[in-house]
Length: 206
Image (cartoon, rainbow, N blue to C red; front, side):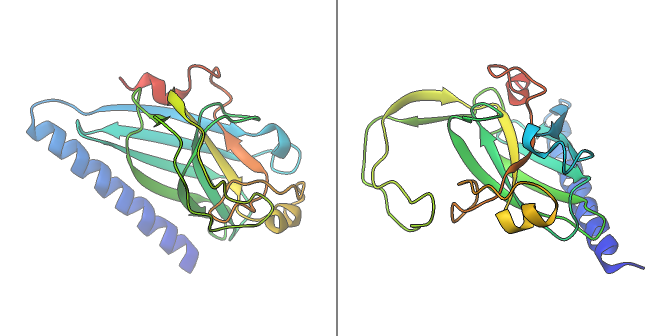
């Protein structure tokens, strides 16, 4: 049997086990866990090159934090992607928060599980400016100080090619963007623009 298939199946099994554990914890407290299900759709810039790209997302609330499960399909095989929480789903994106990497198997499928705060209370804030470490100096170099901002709610999701070269190999534009760990990613592939800018899917989980 295909090794990549076994690896993907094992990852999905781990996700199901984690979901059962969070559900079990909630039942032990005497209530059924809250959860939401929604889709991510192909981004405008990737519709021509990856018309079948999509993802299903489930967020489960155990009362103290949320488990987010993402299952992506229709992507190039054996390719790396970067997953973000966003203020708005498409350009100019607003604030963005790097969450995790996804790697597709030989069939273009990928899975990831992230635990954190993914509900109506997801936000970023900067009560003042402070020095920040400058680590990366590529096409989008690190800022040395942050701008102050009141709390900004962030309810959208986005997925980017980790590399412009991978995007080009898949027939997509080779545009460079800052959406990976070293700030030299490719284009956005999936997002939640199927929801209004001010009412992203995470807002549904109260």
